[in-house]
Amino acid sequence: MKLVIRPFTAADAAVTRAIFYQSIHELATNDYSPAQLDAWAPVDYNLPQWAAQRSKADTFVATVDGISAGFADLIEGSGQTLLGEILIEMLFVRPPYQGQGIASALLAQVQEEARTRGATALVVQASKTTRAFFERHGFKVKQENQVPLRGEVLTNFTMKKKL
Image 1 (cartoon, rainbow, N blue to C red):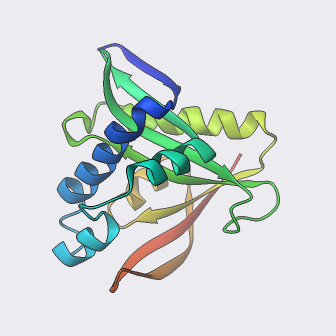
Image 2: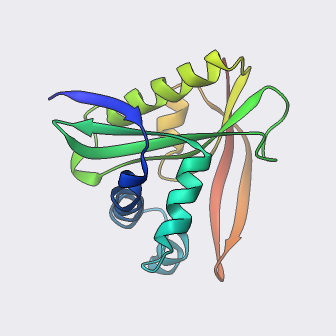
């Protein structure tokens, strides 16, 4: 298995959106209802808007043997963080690639990027599904959130890791 992590390009928009959708709809089914999953990752989306959001963030794409397997992105000054903190907005891995270290490699990449920017901490809004992953990597729960989204309410956790 040859894992490569590289910066996002506009050509990655459709595949990263597909990874986002598949990951949520296949991996979070034990923690969220079908209606919540649809609210979180609806079938319909605006691809140019998705591409613009990924381009505004610092997005990294993980490929395995040339196939896009996951992505993660960082946002500075998002309003969800304090001075010196950077938000991990997204970290998703395609379901067939779960358990192969790809999420950990992406997390290591965004941590290194945050350190090079002088960040003092990383913050993430972790789902119920990903909370344990972030805890294993040194993140601590700061608060539980109830997030209204497209007529549903989803539980997530504000988590923080000092760098």
